[in-house]
Image (cartoon, rainbow, N blue to C red):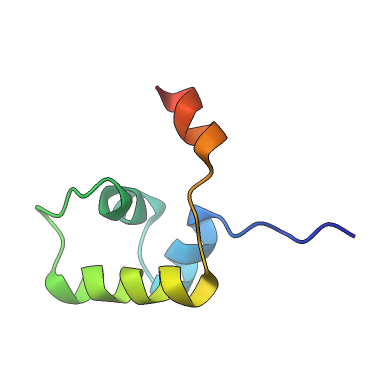
Length: 61
């Protein structure tokens, strides 16, 4: 059975923020984000061992 990949939605739910906020964090756009939110998202990303899907990122480009 295939293991479910961790998604940006999983990170957002666990961190208590929107997917948009996680996306802004991943793209280093911190203008409207508090330091505590950044630290929280970073901690959750490490906790869940989240890695952005490169295929999805390339589709956006």
